[in-house]
Image (cartoon, rainbow, N blue to C red; front, side):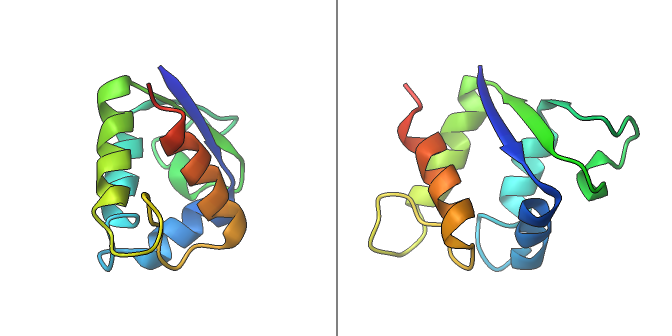
Length: 98
């Protein structure tokens, strides 16, 4: 099991990317299929203003990494349109999958 904590602004960045790249809608759908920890206890936690920690099973972690590796770019895993901070967080997540 892997954990990934995303802030509200990071989730909004994923929403903004949308269908353009796999780090938009595809990433959101993968994360929303995971259990999560949040102080917002409704079915719409994704759109809340609080941090959410996703508990990501290994098979979904690999899907996230594969999607990022299929994006064009200079790195083994690419997250187009994200801030340096969010890109770094997701890169650390991908390289730590074993």
